[in-house]
Length: 263
Image (tube, rainbow, N blue to C red; front, side, top):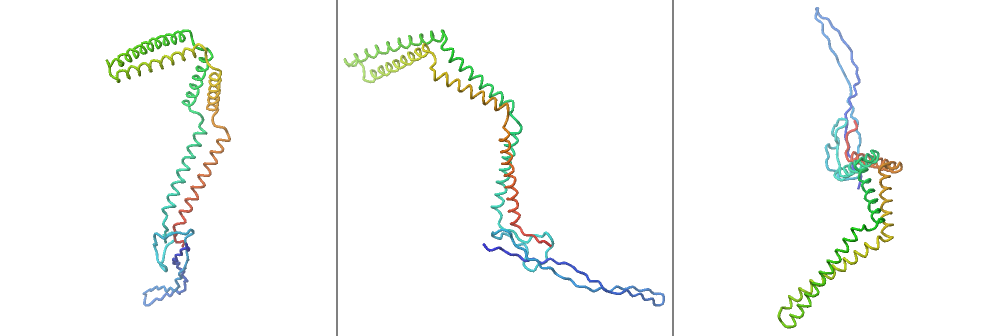
């Protein structure tokens, strides 16, 4: 887009003083007069926008007299204003991130990390200790109940099958008995597997996984207590500096969308 040029005229008064003083006394009367002569010269200045764009406001016309700093014209600056707001938000975010890094860990963060270490230690200790005697006895009791329920449900289904064969009950009643028997059998199987696991103790991969979780929790706690590393803070400062430079550039571009009289 062609650069838009606006011509404005600033008036400068140049006085060239020449004259004479005449004192005349007539009969005791005293008269005094001053005669002045000079030129008024106008300075014409051609101004233009430093960026391309569409003129949104033209405050003066060519040849008009203007004062220094008076608005001459303005481009449509909606996009430039949006860019300034975006850069301001980026700078605010960079400031917040830098403050958080330099402030160090809060007590709540340390407490959470310590609690996570405690949970990881407890989990590892439980796995290493294996099932307690009372847990094994409880698992055996669950198996016994599940077996009894499954046996009863199986017999009930056998009875409904016989009744259905003699057409003494409906098909839906027999189907319901079969479903109960199948559910009871599945619960018995789950209980037996749980008892087997309790008797066998934890698997090696479970113990190793618990150890890895504990190591990770302890490392996190250490990092939280130490705070951000120097290079991390330096990177945050660099991002903050870049955001500030971006905002300054956006504001400069916004100022280029306005032309004022230099004289």
